[in-house]
Structures are given as C-alpha cells and as structure tokens.
Length: 166
Image 1 (cartoon, one colour):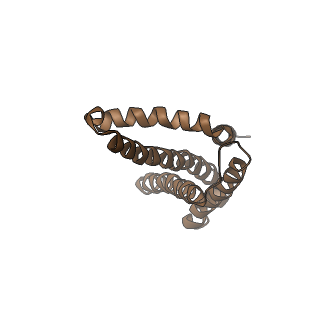
Image 2 (tube, one colour):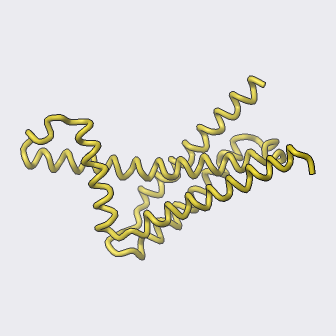
C-alpha cells in the first residue's frame, strides 16, 4: 500500500472517530433533563447579555425578562444550528475523501451530508421526547438541518475554491 493511500485512510478513520464523538456529544446534550438543559442555556444567555447590553441591570423587571427570553431563544437555536453545522462539515469532509464520491455532482454530496444531519436531527428530537422536561420540536429539526446544510456548504465551497486554485 502506498504512502498516500495510508494517509487517506488515516484521515478517514480520524473523521469517522470525530463524527462518532460529535454525535455522542449531541446525544448527551439531548439526554440532559429540562432543568439541566435550561441551566446550561441560562448561563450562556447571561454571558451573551453581559456582552450585548450594558444597561440590562437598569431595565425594568418585565423588560429584563422579555430581553432574557429573546436572547435565550436565540442562544438555544444558535446552539442547535452550530452543533449540526459541525456535524455537516465533518460528514462532507468524510464524503469528499472518497474519489469515486467526489466525481458525483457536488450538490448530491452536499444534500447527502444534509440528509444524514436531517435523519440524526429527527432521531435526536425523538430521543428528547423520552427525557424528563424535554419535548421534541419540529422547529429544532429544521434548524438542525439548516445547520448541517450550512456546515457542509461552507466546507464544500472552501474545497471547490482550493481545488480551482490548484
């Protein structure tokens, strides 16, 4: 076996390991009960609010609560988008490592990575239905899928730019 082929297979093994680890991380986030999940989101939300709004403490109680809820929603949905963006990026990197697959139209490879993210997002939301204080949400599946699409698209664009420059 030549050196290049060994390197390609080493990269594939690493990508598969990263994909599995990332899927386990996503699963563990979903396995957290409602209180634990809210606590983590609230901590992040408070840090974001401190960065965004220096007058937060001066707001009325009602305004603070509304602002907190809005930022919390954005933080939670950005988390969904980001975690699946990473998953989509990892999947497309793995798919692009196969020359036979690279010869297929790039949009099919991109949609394949997105489809994998969609299936995992659906299974993840179903899983949340069995966790105390959590409920599955169709909106989250959509956000997860868009995140996977964006992550895979980002990597694909970079790959195409690098390939054209060669």
